[in-house]
Image 1 (spheres, rainbow, N blue to C red):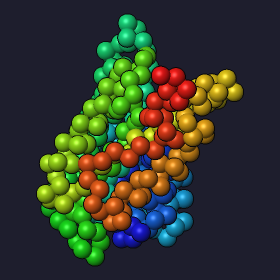
Image 2 (image 1 turned 90 degrees about the horizontal axis):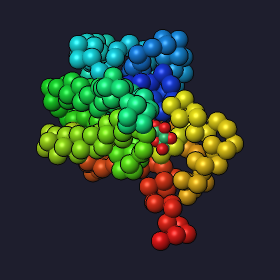
Image 3 (image 1 turned 45 degrees about the vertical axis):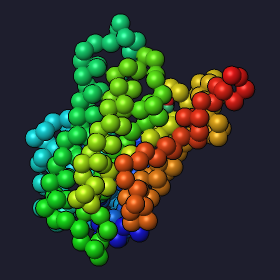
Length: 264
Ligand code: BGC
């Protein structure tokens, strides 16, 4: 489905990013696996992707650092020839109640989750614009998929930094989609609900936590990273060429106000 396309996935050595990078490789794309720590994990992802007969490489860069993002995108264009798909996935949580939250915790989450996506989107867009549409490859000049969260919509007590970053991702995604659509660049987002990854281990690790969590998920199961990977592959492909500026919620119904299933 994505044969001949070059994809960059940030934060691709674990969790949702890892599954997404592998999913893109399975769909035929060549993939750059960005990571900031744990090179071994990134190399494992690379090996798995190469098993599909496509190219893959690991690239270390902190997405919140402008010089590192510029160098990564330049390096990818040199090595792989160009870039067709960005999955701006790298993200983290630093949870605290408001009065305990340090400025460093606030800033770190905004820097990685929001500024990091901005920097990656800006740099890949320069290459999309330089190259333009290559009809044999894709109907679009480029695709940007922002990894958001149900918390771009659902307020989340104890997580004001994270929820604010994802609220920012929503408006950034829509604004960029509007700005870049005339150049045939499609910007969209995927908003995962509760997906079984290291970021939210405490929410699913114990039976009690899992029971509490499932109360928030009408579909009654915790998501798998592959649930998100499939959504990303779909959005990146020409089958969804007319999808511009949309958020695809992949959340088992978490955004359906499950508390109202019986009340109200
Ligand atoms: C967060 C997870 C959380 C999920 C649902 C995600 O964006 O990173 O920690 O479990 O939203 O609340």
